[in-house]
Length: 297
Image (cartoon, rainbow, N blue to C red):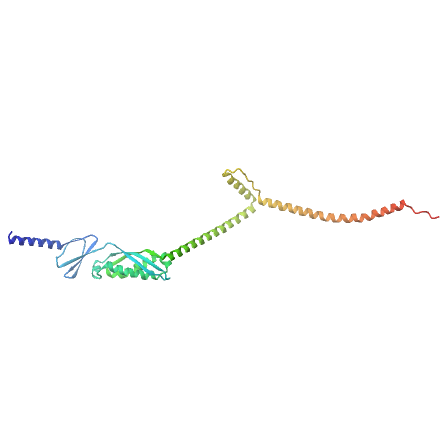
């Protein structure tokens, strides 16, 4: 093969390599940041883009949301409890130029600042607040990160506390506290039920006092409920209120009868005592008649 042929082959190879280096494809979820001789030339939209080889450099930046786990951090809370907290952050690039110019490694930078912010924010709250108000803590962390990363062309979309590890002693103490709290609620509910039942029973007794027939109807309803279970024994409850009234009337009549008999018996006894001497006198007189004095000569 001649020298001219070799030169032609080399030229064709260089042309193919240059064409491959000049043609760039920017995907739909990306933006291209173009530098020419090291100077910013702007961004390139998705599609087929041609650059000058060696002279131009095209950086493709993804605009999709990135999920970044935040490693578990040992944190001492406001009430001096040691906990391990892990979180997860979601962010996306909103300014491709700043994300390339302002910072070198976006993911590493956000990871480090997220860990620091997590320790600072969680350490300002007590353990009960961390467990009960995670939404407020998440928003506080997100706002701090968003203010910092805005200068880098990023936006923090969401931060969530993923896992909170407590010491075993604290878990047992919280379990006892939860059990005591539930017992307290159960006792309060039971007391409120007893109070309400007593109030309703008092109202019902007042109504039955005014309407005695209501008690009879309640007794009949009780008989119907007993008959549902196919009992062989039938109970006929006596009206309690009427029974108490009859007993009171009976005792009143007995007391009245006893009071009437007492004065009558006290007057008859002295009359008999007064009659006794009269009979004695009559006996003496008869004796005198039976034994007359002898005549004096």
